[in-house]
Image (tube, rainbow, N blue to C red; front, side):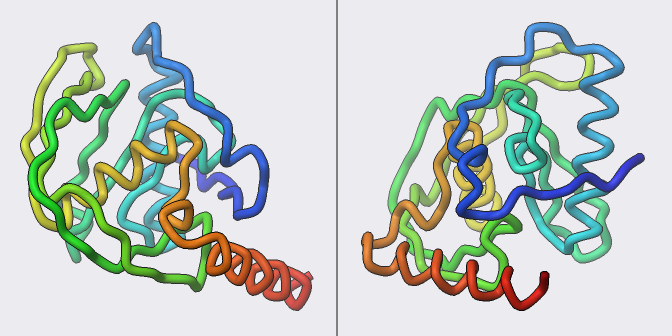
Length: 167
């Protein structure tokens, strides 16, 4: 498994839409393994392939403390939403910034597993938020897009300043 570089806002590649996976093969299975390795390395709970410059509709997540609840979704599609909840979100592509975002409280997602078999998963709470956050990435959308233009501009300036300090 390989740790891959994560793209950071305002990198324009984060706005690219991911394409559906047409064949589930060893390349896709390796991508999923690398995504978990990258996510754990950077202490994240979710990662979309877009964030590592691979524009395929694949997301991974694990919100357990002991890395025991790996979930992955190939070609995920949210097919149902219910209720509303506001929760503070962060993102590996928007480091050091967190903000409250309103999303559906419950979702049902349809996807494929590593063998190409379709499945559905109903989720609520933190898992539902993660699924929505990561599927947004596949459509070129970031959690900061839910903020006002002024707050988004402040985040961009903060991250540019942080990047200059670390170069």
